[in-house]
Image 1 (cartoon, rainbow, N blue to C red):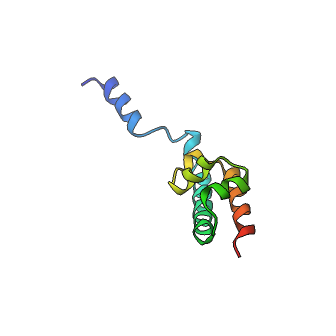
Image 2 (cartoon, rainbow, N blue to C red):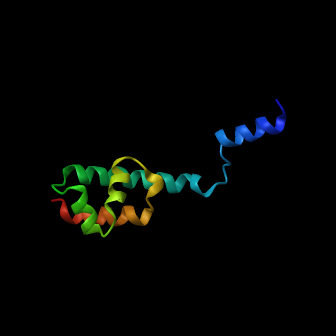
Image 3 (cartoon, rainbow, N blue to C red):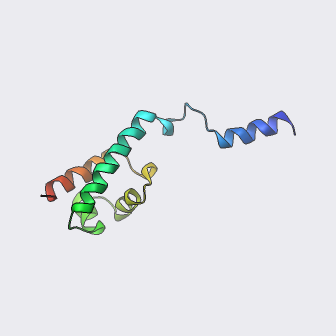
Length: 90
């Protein structure tokens, strides 16, 4: 196998560390927010549709959050959800 082919294959398995999607601090922040929000959702009496409606976000965003798909959510979306739920949870 040529080195060009093996290098290209290695790039697919290990993306470059300078990729903006791999900002560790940003990912940690989103992960912490996700944990807080999923806890607030668990103790809330509201369903996903109601939460999304009150937050002014598409239902799919709440579904993505509950499925752990952080790459589909911006920090701003998570902060809106957190504020919405903190007001509603006693």
